[in-house]
Image 1 (cartoon, rainbow, N blue to C red):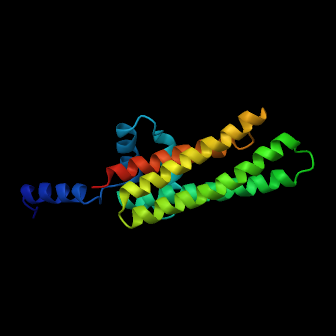
Image 2 (cartoon, rainbow, N blue to C red; image 1 turned 135 degrees about the horizontal axis):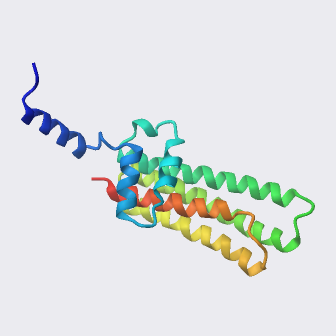
Image 3 (cartoon, one colour; image 1 turned 180 degrees about the horizontal axis):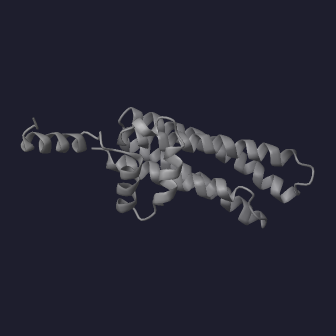
Length: 175
């Protein structure tokens, strides 16, 4: 015996409205459709890496993106410490790395703040915190430009900016 088709339609609409259908793929597609700066493949690839992403709704995926930003900032700090300890790192690069170490330390707190604010459903403040992370990444890039040396942190910077964009855009999708 099949349920009445009207009941099936109501159930499907309820699932969509309440975020139960928010898979990584559908959320990243909606984010990429909403903001051309979201790189769909990056969004899916990075969010899928998190153990809780398969069970997360849109709200959970926004928090996961913020958490991934925290993890990247910690990784950048570790990279900086390793590069500063290398004997063959030149003086100009060391100065820029020293500046970036503080910037990435602030970035981990910005992403953690984004997580906390989104978790508390303070979405505007969460998005402001994610925007701080973008600014900090750009400041680090600028330190290397001013020193006239190539940045060994370019991938960390690109990741930080993109995961902040993903976090912000997914937060905008929360109903």
